[in-house]
Amino acid sequence: MTNFAKSATMAAGILASTVLGYAGPEGTYEVEGTNPDGSTYAGVVTVERFEETYSVVWEIGDTVFEGTGLGAAPVKGMTIMGPAADNDYVLTVGYISGPDNFGIAYYVEQDEGIWEGIWAYGGSGTVATEAWYPTE
Image (cartoon, rainbow, N blue to C red):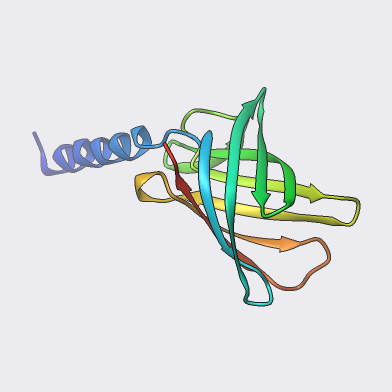
């Protein structure tokens, strides 16, 4: 086997092992975040597949945020947006809470099923952070 063939085989194996590690975002998580003003919060977030999208519900104190998520998965070495899939490792969510509270969030799966992301209220120029920790 040539050095090129060995390198190609090794690269394919690494890519396959990386792709197989993704399990999609479905599940229940403990959530910890930082608001745009620097204050912190904690709660629970639940992600369920709903046909080609994800239903995302946060319970933070007495407030419930409901969102719809779109996933992205690795395909041939690129990240491709598409219908919800088992290997999604990126999640973008539009959310609402009440008539005047809406925004967008973006998460990327990290090691051990942790999801880390950023979010912003609609109309805001400030970005905040959030992390999800699997409870299962």
